[in-house]
Image (cartoon, rainbow, N blue to C red; front, side, top):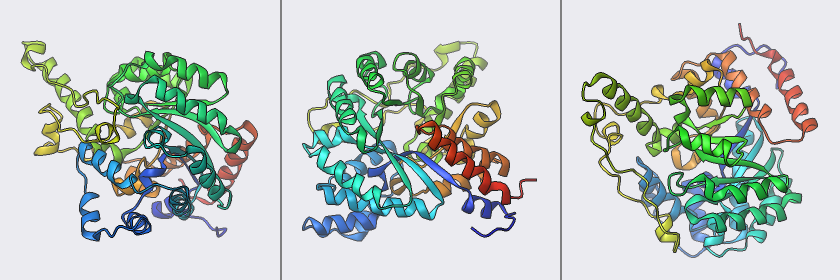
Length: 400
């Protein structure tokens, strides 16, 4: 990087060193890579069909895309090919470090050789300039025993860069208490712990992830904006929310959050209280984990209030995202891209949205980038090295 003062917001974002802490490898499968993988397996897909499938607008559509696209990840070489592409993309965005989530629960369901897949990924990572560690992710609705299988594999492969156990999937399918033993086991084996919570569910799911599971970071967690005491807890314990704005928009999570805001305002204004808003069914029914087509199949959305935002003049905008409110409140947050290829985004694009659409200042953007290193699950000495390099790099930015 040239030794010159960087002044424009665009230049700051481009040159700003970053870490990516909430990134699903499988969600980096671009249409072009998918076409290549299909050809490897003897299938010719139409580019038009692939493009159409990637134009998702709802969470059920995203689930269908994820199920279909990842079905072409069948061999260790497929995963290595995807990883090499992903590492190059991160490098192009000045991302120096990533803690990459791997959907091991889905691999096991598909009866793949997890150890062989991961060996190929680890070998690919060793050849890249981007520093990578791995999070082995279990699928919540598959149940605690399947989650324990994932945790044991994570422990088995710690020496090759697996540093955390995560719980993803449908946060409303099973209570956090069902997974206490799994998280206790992960902690006893010195694995870091994460959980998706407060994405489509409410603030209590975040509380449970922290208090019951001992989660050290929360995937998404946007529902925390509704609970002042919870935000105080996150600040006091420095438990960050991994914020993924475009993902929240594309899955309907932001619409659901805004629907809760609308419901609260209507309830407060109505003399009838709760009776003015009849109860509605939830969006995420429990799906039995018997077959991959069952657990990853899309479900039709119920006619809940959040669907109002997807259908008419109240459609949510990225400007409605609570990221700026979290930053102003002092809640620890990091900015991430989640499943970038499937949501049509990048880590750099998320920073650009935070600047151009959510009103964050250059100083706040730099603080977000620094937080991505500070909240990484790295040994103290290595984390400090990243932070020292980061602070040295930003000395050329004009932040006044």
